[in-house]
Amino acid sequence: MTFAAEEAKQKRQLYEATAVKTGEIAPPRVLQPCKPGHCPFAGQTVTVLQGKRQKGGAIDELKEEFEAATGAKLNLVQLAHEELYPNFISDLTNLGGKYDAAYAAAWWLGELADGGFLLSYDKYYGDPRFPKWNIDDVLPAPRSLLSYGGKKYMVANDHDGQVMYYRRDLLADAQHQAAFRQKYGYALDVPKTWAQFRDVAAYFNGKDLNGDGVPDHGLSMHLKVGAQGMFHFMSFSAPFVIGPDNPRLYWFDPQTMKPLIESPGHVRALTALVDLVQFGPKEMLNWDLGKSWDHFLAGRAALAFTWGDLGALAQEGGSKVKGKIGSAVLPGTREYYSIAQHKWVKTAQPNLIGNTTGGSWAGVISKQSKVPAATYYLFALMATREKSQVYAARGWDGIDAGRTFHFLPPEGTGQMETYLKAGWDEADVRDYSKAYFATFTNKLQFPYLRIPGAYSYWQALDLHLAEAVAGQLSPEAALKATAVDFEEITIRRGRERQRQSYRASLGQ
Image (cartoon, rainbow, N blue to C red; front, side, top):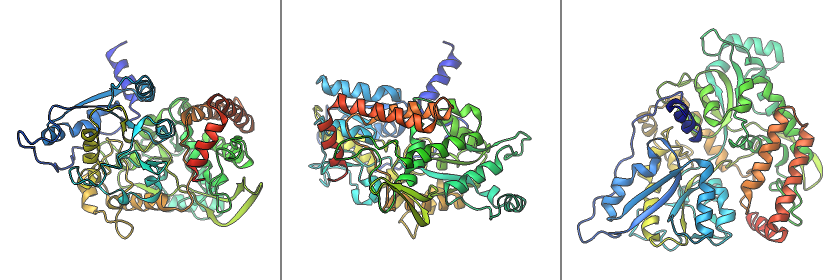
């Protein structure tokens, strides 16, 4: 393999955008070096497993400060994202003790905490010997992912959720406004429903959106199998299924573990998502996340819905959309299928659903760790306000906003200056802050799946979604095939175990 090919492979593994340059803002040092003979963890080594990231990510950035303050050593092992979970679970189940901790995704907890593989940090949290951070600073929805079964396992760090991004300049253009009204009979504005989102995507598709004389696209998504494209469907489908009369039933019947994924609401959602694909580039069927972000950052799409990283990356050097990228909560629907009532329910206002879709990557401690206190110390240092508010303002580290001090007044206690120092446009950050605050405080939330085998279920969904968007299966057939696979996974895992775990995850 040539160097260029190997480099391209590595970039794909990172799920990172390549169209922009990373900024240089760094978090302040918060710890002083320990005095010889008084270092709390002298001689210890903390080994952490994480996905490959440029610059080693935020953990590697802490190495010198952590080691100087504790006397311990940090050994950071970086693997491709698809290798993370298999390596960690193998070490845990085989009692290898190779890793003290992992930079884990929230969906891992169903397997790891339920299986008794992780150490809760309850006894360390609040202890004055460790760096101070406050779990109550985390907004309600992402805070719910930090604990499992009443115990704290994930140390607050990344707070994933999806919002809609739109080109503010295009929607404000007088000529576009006039032409859109003439074509669709209503005012061009930030979409409040997925039907309106479709109209805006259709209108801008094929127009030159960045002034280079080349036709561009209505939207940008990533739909490659194995590249987490199924997350798009989860967020997109939420308001077709979840609503005031059906706040939690989406994945399974909690009494029987029968899959619910082929309900009329799911089918209508997938039909609508497949319809949207025509307004993006054909290549996005094979795009990973970074490719999709790059397309929007180059000014080549009017709309996107994805994670917080895109809003931050848009502020970096090379972005064509800085000062033009608006953010808003994901659009809703005018009716949803209540699985609880077996009927469609109309809503007076758009049915908007919050979400914590994604990994919400954060540190978890192996129960086999011989240095658990030192390991928690490292993650607590990452969780401090001084560090976190800088992480959330940067695009390259993959850490997204979710705490009160990340959001601007009046919603939060954050400071505009923090974002301006990181290179943000003021209008961009105001939209971004409002969109994520509203997403994470919405009482109606898309139910996050945290049961053993969660990712196996999601991989099955991912495969059949790809068949639907490629036109190989109808939406109904794709979801029926997904339900069959779900049932097989449940049987293999043990229906009663899965049922108990699922009910626990719903608070039942």
